[in-house]
Image 1 (cartoon, one colour):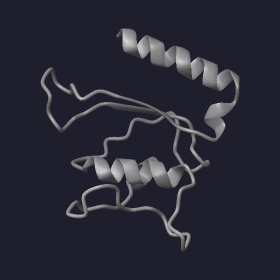
Image 2 (tube, one colour; image 1 turned 60 degrees about the vertical axis):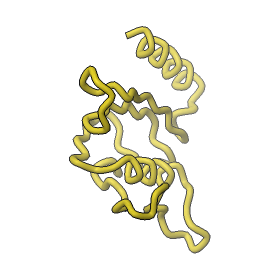
Image 3 (cartoon, rainbow, N blue to C red; image 1 turned 30 degrees about the horizontal axis):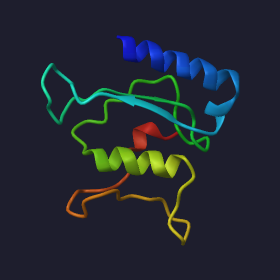
Image 4 (tube, rainbow, N blue to C red; image 1 turned 45 degrees about the horizontal axis):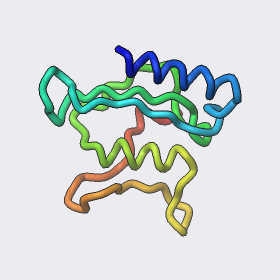
Length: 105
């Protein structure tokens, strides 16, 4: 609860200065259900990135790996491959890769 209050304070300061119009702030915890599991991990993502992230919505991404979430955040903050295509892989090449379309506007 204390960490969320500090994150809310940070978001207020970022909003006051217009930073979240072109950026992303992320809060997450590796304690999803009281144990250190790798599923059902809550992420709070504030900001629009480069304008492509949806705001004010709860997204259940389903059974996806973190690489897809991180690739989506990289792409939504304007990072692209040299040829201009979106970044669809982050980390281990054996993972599925791709973007989480439900997060994108």
